[in-house]
Amino acid sequence: LSGETLSFDKFRRHFHKHIITINDDSQVIIKDNLVMNGVIHVIDEVLIPPAYQPDIVDFLTSEPREQYFNILVDLVVQVNLTGALQSPGPFTLFAPTDAAFAQIGDFIDVNNATQVTDVLLYHVLSGIVLAEDIDDDSTATTLSGETLSFDTLYDHIITINDESQVIFKDNLVMN
Image: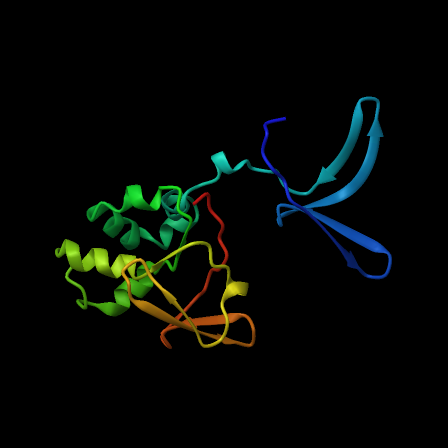
């Protein structure tokens, strides 16, 4: 009724049972309930229209994630990248946690806006890159113009530049 597009996926689990998912998230758990004016399919999650989904900044500052990204958010605000990370994108952000920032010590001068901007943009790719899209020994160019290299271990552990490990992956946001 709102004009939003839904995507459906049907696959077979076990021998005769088909699983139907909507937008890769919600699963139809009871299907084909015929009623006087239509049909009802019961699903296991609320479908959120894209206009109501969080952007990157909203995601980083929402519960419970805000406890991990205080330094990142402070730096984004400090160098005025908030608007860019709330723009339509799409973007992929490799978001360093507060613990990751604590490990680098004084490596960057947080009072140098150019240096902070370069470091932050080094964590952003143009486009949506899901974990399944990252191949072993692949590379990608960041918004800073530098290249990141990726390795995958056991098909589920992703490391970046032989140092950083992706610990929370595929958090989809509006942009």
